[in-house]
Structures are given as C-alpha cells and as structure tokens.
Image (cartoon, rainbow, N blue to C red; front, side, top):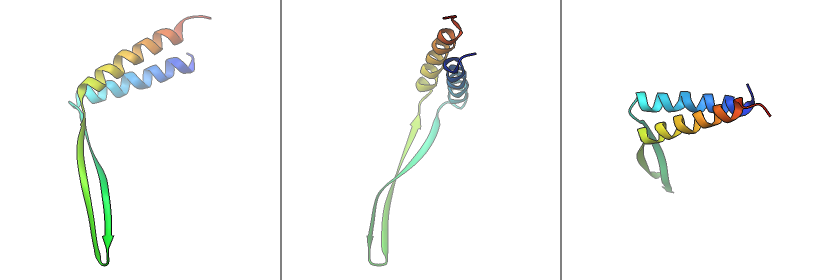
Length: 71
C-alpha cells in the first residue's frame, strides 16, 4: 500500500475510536497569570464530537481508495 492509503487506514481507526467513545473529551489550560505568590489559571473543557469521527472515517476511506489505484 502507498503512504496515502496508510494515512487513510489511520484516519479510519481514529474515526472508529471517536465514534465508539461517543466523542473524546479534552481540557485546555488558558490565561495563566502570576501575581506574587498567587497563580491563576482557567481550564476550558471541550469535546471532539462523533461527527468528527464520521468525517475521519469517510476521508480515510477516500484516501485508502485513492492510495490503492495503480498509477
């Protein structure tokens, strides 16, 4: 298989994991401020939605198909 097809396979696997977990939560730290001994941070929580997983599966399938064609 060509490298393009391998990238497609990786995207398909990642998409299946995202859909199976019904999204992947993440936390992003922002706005770190230090004033003397005080330190203030804020954390923003987000979710990679299953729609992103479905998109990854579709794009991965297209890449696998494109990578398998002979030149």
